[in-house]
Length: 312
Ligand SMILES: C[S@@+](CC[C@H](N)C(=O)[O-])C[C@H]1O[C@@H](n2cnc3c(N)ncnc32)[C@H](O)[C@@H]1O
Image (cartoon, rainbow, N blue to C red; front, side, top):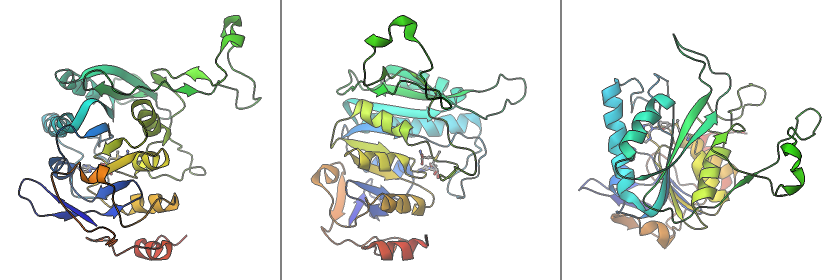
């Protein structure tokens, strides 16, 4: 098990350790303060949007005034900028209202790459406003990106007849058979809202969003950091795509642990040197395997199920 400490604070134990990553049940500022300068390849942030949402925890407030929210956001952004490697990437997902302000702040320190418009369906207009149809995914790098993988998306087809939707102006035969170049407008990423199909909790992103960010900006075994764990979408995608990951979640970490275990990626025990080297000060007992803090030692699927009470 690993415990980390920084700024003279007590050592805090990880909430869980997976094959490639480690999760802490803490305020992201505590985690970030333990991380060395220029040690992370990619950071994905999906913070609360300050929309008075109930996150089932009293450990943070989603109804700050604008100034407080921005000051809070700038504090974790400063830390993200500090821990990012040269050429590393920072993604921040938020509503346009905050993306505008975040962009103006980040522009002082990082290089703007994209404002990716993520299409939102089933939202509703408030007051004298247009119908909001997208959220923003800001994409910044620290200098020239060290990794940029061009992604492709399948050629869109009609969900009723299966035929292709566009004719590509008579140039269909020149399209790459692997699909179309990914653009900065993602309209295939809406959350599933119909109860019948909904398996994720309200806060979880469709996994394709962090997955694309990871695939676009990192290579195998790079380190991905997500300070706002939520349901753990980023961690699952990092695992599945063979990237190391580090995370924090201030609320309940059980849903993340459950999801990791469902993907068969949960192991307690050894942590790679790649991850250990990221922390300023740590204690590590190789193979100790005990998940400390509020979680019981979890070494098998059965004990994991019992500890988190997942039942089926
Ligand atoms: C929008 S959700 C993230 C969802 C996640 N991207 C996913 O797809 O599963 C934001 C999360 O940040 C957590 N959070 C809020 N403030 C935090 C803080 N200071 N440190 C760590 N986590 C925090 C909340 O508890 C919430 O679970």
